[in-house]
Image (cartoon, rainbow, N blue to C red):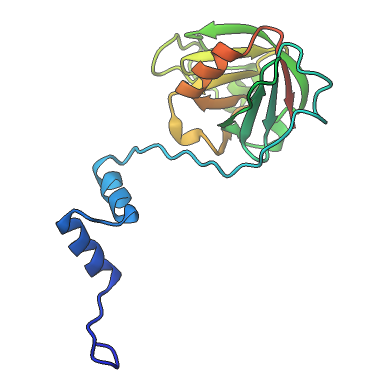
Length: 193
């Protein structure tokens, strides 16, 4: 009871009562969903919107801008008819991060994976090869860049997205890389900042 003798209810009591009557607040419903499905994907949309001007001289063959600090990939098609933004995983440390200009030189559905020499040096227990499939760290699709060993690719480990978690590559959710894969061309210009 409060000073004016009106009953009070705690948040926990409200949540329990609301859930029992089926009119729970969104946060209560989210908590219930998470309890039932602990692997719920959360996609944040709090990255800054960027313009291609100032980063590219034109949109010839389209443009991909990867903001490693904002953990977002921006894509513009050649005709500038839309702008796509995707959350990404970025390299674990600055020494694994390569910044600058490159381009898409190859596209592969169902890529296979081999660890780089530097990855093997850091972790000699890595397998020599992983073929396409659910265990592949490159996910379902990959855009190969002109820099050796660097890719923009999917991941089967969705916990990595939005984090510093890669060995140098840029990772996307598999459904996002599938969409980007269809939009980007061999020759699409890429800038990592």
